[in-house]
Amino acid sequence: MIKTRLLKLLSEGRKYILYQVIWQWIALLGQIVSVFAIGNLVERILEGTVKEPVVLRTLLILLCMTALRFLADQMAARMSYAASADVKNTLRDRIYEKLLRLGASYRERISSAEVVQMSVEGVEQLETYFGRYLPQLFYSILAPVTLFLCLKSISLRASVVLLICVPLIPASIIAVQKIAKKLLQRYWGMYTQLGDSFLENLQGMTTLKIYQADEQKAAEMDEEAGRFRKITMKVLTMQLNSTSVMDIIAYGGAAAGMILAVQEFIAGNVSFGGTLIIILLAAEFFIPLRLLGSFFHIAMNGMAASDKIFRLLDLEEPRRGTEHFPEKYIDIHMKNVRFSYDGKREILKDISMEFPSGSFISLVGESGCGSKGNERSAAGGESAGFFK
Image 1 (cartoon, rainbow, N blue to C red):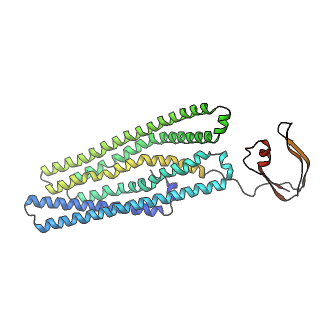
Image 2 (cartoon, rainbow, N blue to C red):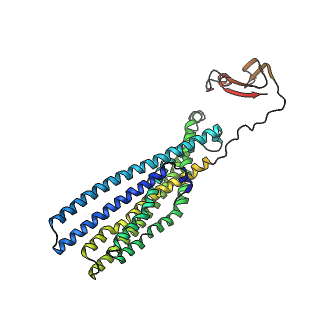
């Protein structure tokens, strides 16, 4: 599950993803070396040929590989943070620049609540997609192949069985993806709708109180929150069910490889040390993909959020410099202008003004809020016009 348009947004993030995969692979190599050292030591103990230098060398290898794995894990975590930070900054800059180009008219096509949710929660969901999911996807392909190449010299049959069982986990992920995609789109639709209703009711709280409609709106929001709770529970149920399926496949595949290795040992085709190595490393074939499955659900949520983000970025922008003005320039004169809202109390009285052609006029009142009655509403507003 790779979205090429998302990858194109990355500037420095691609190299961080590559570095993270390399560090994860180095940690795997350190673990393989450690297991081989333990298997060799156990084999020598059973043969009665173990000596003190062999034990010391094994301990030294284990200490060095443990330090190497610790370093690799720390560096992989740093690369993950760097990749996610890069994409978050890039996406938020793109959203902000798009809103600037759209101007105040963006609210005619998308609500402010949805923009806020996309910029905050939506971008945060994509952090897992770039910082965890994508590196784990590439590492999950590299790890089983590396393990197969290392173990095939011990038992080709057991290694082939382990390698064949590995693709069953991605197959289950693809099957879940078809169900999850529609479900998560509904989830994000309800999520943005609930946020939009909350922001709208909060901004209009004064009006709702005046018309005594606040209880009605609260009841409507309770219903929306209940629907969102139900869809959230469906998403969690889907995630738990798919995780159970992946666990069965992972543990079943590892068990099949271990059983075959034991059978090879009983038949005398594999030494005890070699069997121990296969048993200790069998789970490593499936752990990367199992971890990928746990990131998959969060990544799918981020993908659903990215669809809304791209929908905003693809909005048509207003064209600049396309206004058409009258061919003839005119002057505007106002003399003794009066205005009243109710026909009784005059707001404007005997106003005389001149607007020369070609000039840009702005009228700014004492206050822009219009909250002190009709007089301040009329005088406090702000208007501008271009006259030719």
